[in-house]
Every structure is written in structure tokens, then in C-alpha cells.
Image 1 (cartoon, rainbow, N blue to C red):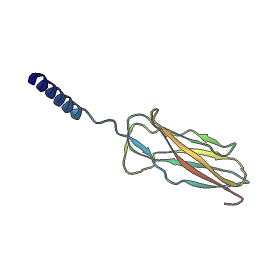
Image 2 (cartoon, rainbow, N blue to C red):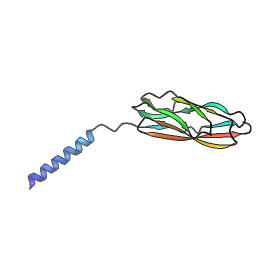
Image 3 (spheres, one colour):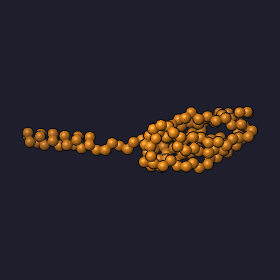
Image 4 (cartoon, one colour):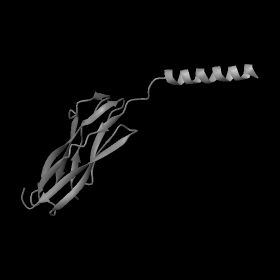
Length: 132
């Protein structure tokens, strides 16, 4: 019985050692919320960019899009963010948007970024006024 107990104890210790010696899981990234808000003239619309800033480390390319813009709005392609890391909050890329003449109101759009596995989003405020 002592032999079985010792073998089990040795096996458990080896398993614990192996678990602690295994490499750490892949580091993560975070889409930073920059609190972006734009004013759009209701009569003329506006073309502008929303900035994309990621922080952390990523091993896959990150792409970004903007969703839930006012009706009729369009987005232009953004340059994908290649694998890398960033720990200072530097803007990595931007997504172009074109908002047509739109009824006055405050619209909440979403900036979405994905590396193909993890998808994150932050709110964007589109403030449409009779005059900016």
C-alpha cells in the first residue's frame, strides 16, 4: 500500500511540475475606447475617420470595421494591423466613414476589431446637428 501511495504522490508531483513548467498562454490585446465623438452637419453630412488603437500583444492580423452608422453611411477599408504588440496606446490605424445628410439626433455606432478569434467593440458617438 505504501508503494502505491508513493507512486501516486510522485505522479501528482510530476504532473504539478509539468503544469507549472508549461509555457504561459498567449498574451491578449484590448481595443482601447478613445471616447470618440464626431459632429455631423445634418444638411451636408461628413467624411472623417475613426481611430483604432489596440494595446497588448497579438499573433494574428487585426482588422477593424464600423457598424451601426446612420442609414446611408459608408465605410472605407482600413489597413489591417499586423501581428505585434503595443503597450503605449499608439493609434494603429483608422477606419474612414462617410455620413450623408442625416436627421438630427445622436447615433451610437460601434468600432469593432477582430483577430479572427477574439472580437471586441467600443462605442462611437455620431452627433448630428443642424449646425456643427
